[in-house]
Length: 332
Image 1 (cartoon, helix red, strand yellow):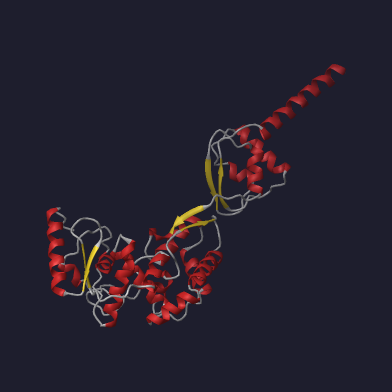
Image 2: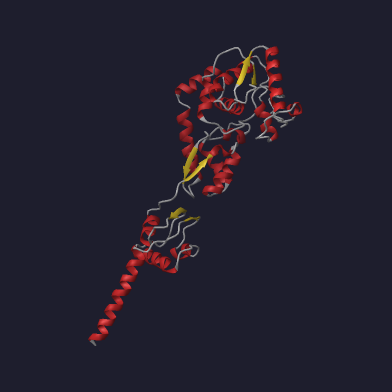
């Protein structure tokens, strides 16, 4: 009898040790990132994990001990040295991975809503409706273009499954914070709406790779708007023709029928051509006052421009730049 009790005791101790080791000391030995779109049981979640059965069984046991009956939607990471009990604690605390999205990877709000949908869940239309609700988007003739002006190009962190309303509310707070009293005063002195400032800033961004020129280019476009003259912004032609990487605009391109072709339309296009950084909006709001109405890229590959108020001087600059492109055999 004593022998049987001893054997049973040894077995129990061994099992307890086996369980303790599995729960508190057994490392996963693999790193995985997984997403859960809806609340799921521990058994359902572990089905797709590449860990050995010992680790997974220990994890499920740990969930039972810690009363974790359902794992919340989210994006999570289990590291290669994580034990089952550490994974349980992580999921109980809902310690999600941040999803970083640089929103100027796209150039329009509609495309951005699709990107948000693919990265953090929910339908693209849900984001559109949430932004319209939070921003009270009712006055725009073309709300699709106006929505793009709600975003400032930057990298933002999200949680998987974050609600469209929460996302929209966060961007609304950024928007309100940007349009403070000083910027509103500068905007009103220019005689432009917030949307027009943003559109002009997107044109400035499209025209230069050298930010130090931004306020000069903004002043040039303001001079053209006030004359009035057509803006003749090459970046709008690229946008209209979807020629993102083009290094050269051809004469025939300037005739493309589009409301964004500023060689044909008067004034600003109906919407931005980029999701734009705040610094470009500030460059527009504090544009440089000068008499330039022409600009041409320099023929040295620097990305800088030559500015002038003389058409004949501009023509000479343009000829030099054309020869430069020809010399590099750049056709498009």
